[in-house]
Length: 117
Length: 112
Image (cartoon, rainbow over all chains, first blue to last red; front, side, top):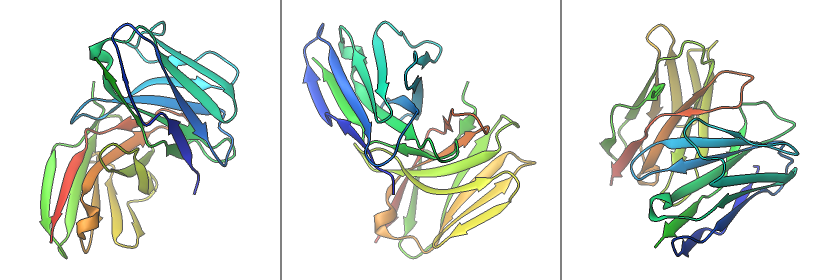
């Protein structure tokens, strides 16, 4: 099956620093990728939809200047958490939609655990 | 506004018995539903899906039932195995849209 990777899998950073998380589709092209955030014992919350070659679409309540998304190629999207604070600590998961498959085919990455001290 | 809900946060079942996980939704425009399985610190993995034109889809030990009039779907796992212990999320979308709406998850524990 299709594989989506995320790097790093776990990152610890100091408050005020920026952290970049990569999401890659390894064996398929993804014109659209999605970034989710999961709080403990809660559902996956869609943060933004990332489209290759264009600006990301952010969900209501998500600060686009804080969570910078870049989708520079058909296999890579990055999420940069700028000036991270402890409340940004969370589990971030990306998913990618196979460009050649239907919109209902999304493959999820393994997630990135961010801890901000 | 939670459009997809899983009202049971946890479920325990004996190995070999049936596990039934439930999901309710409010948006009648949803026309495709999926179940995902998630282990801690991992991304969700796809289990099974169903289109709104069907009321049942079966794949091995997993069967999903859809009741459109009640806006309710359920996942049946039979027989349950210890390896099925995980958090299960239901998701819904309106095709051809991209946005998945996830439920809050149900943590299933299968007791050996």
